[in-house]
Length: 217
Image (cartoon, rainbow, N blue to C red):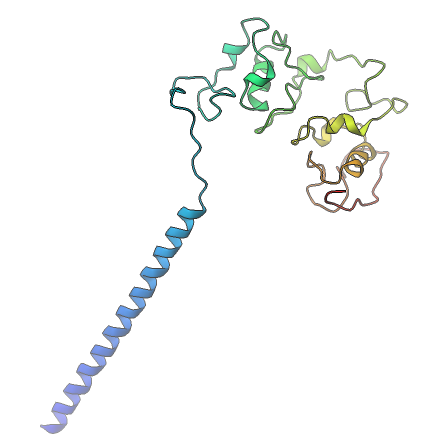
C-alpha cells in the first residue's frame, strides 16, 4: 500500500511539474507574440492624411497629395491652366503629358519628360510623340537625345533637379554618367545603385570605370 501511495504521489508531482512547464512555455510564447505585434505596430509608418477639406472625390494635387483619385484627362483639356507645382508627384504630371503629348500646360522639361523636379513616384520614360520631335539646340548638353560626340557636356545639367530626376537612359555614354557621379558622389540620381563607384555600367562607350569614392564630397 505504501508503495502504491508513493507511486501515486510521484505521478501527481510529475503531472504538476509538466503542467507548470507547459504553462511557463505558453506564457513565454504569449509574451513573444505580444512584443512582436507591438514592435511591428510601432515600426509601421503612420498613415499620412490630407486636410479635412480634401474629400475622397477631390483630385490628387500638391494640396491633396495623398488622395487616391487622379484623372489625367482633367488636366489635359483646359489649355495652359496647370503648372508643375500643381501636381503631387512627377508621375502625375507625366501622366498628363502622356494623355496629351501636345502639352498645352507646358510641362515638358525636354525630350518627353514632364516636371523632373517634382517628388516621387517618378515616371521618366519619355513620351514618344514628343521625344521623336525633339530638336537639339546649339547650347543643349550632350545626352541620349543629343548624343553627338563633339557636343559639349555639362554634368551640372543632370543635377539641376536632384531627387532622382535622371536615369541611365538619359545619358549618351557610360563616361558621361560617370562624370555626373564624379561631380556629385552623393548620387541623387541613383546612377550607382551597387555603390561600387561606377555609374551605369551597361551604357555604351566611351567608358570611364575608374571608381568614384561614394558619399558627400
